[in-house]
Length: 144
View 1 (cartoon, one colour):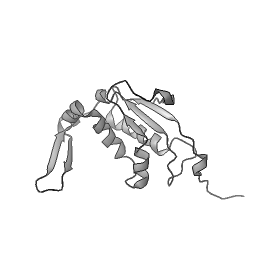
View 2 (cartoon, one colour):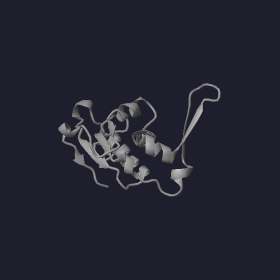
View 3 (cartoon, helix red, strand yellow):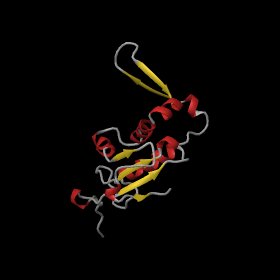
View 4 (cartoon, one colour):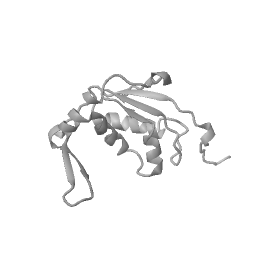
């Protein structure tokens, strides 16, 4: 009996393109599905230490839904590293002004926080509306 663990090689990786429509779907659910596709966890050849995920296009980010009181209570914070340099923005303002950034932060937060995660995040494209510029790649629609 052969007890070797399967590990995919870089030359064996096949990448596809998927579209996720975020319209009327919760932000976290869309982000979790996108992160799963970017990591390659939907494939039987999943290897934790390799980037064998697919390219993901997320459209209609401006029509994403936040459940509960998150629209008014959730805050996005970042710091400039200067004294008093903390900036806060409410989720409803972020959704109105920068819906692509809101979706990108949610998805990249679910990826590994190392060089492998940064490499996976490069395969993500996020658009506020229904139009995207990746039609030449013939992306498939991902339903969940």
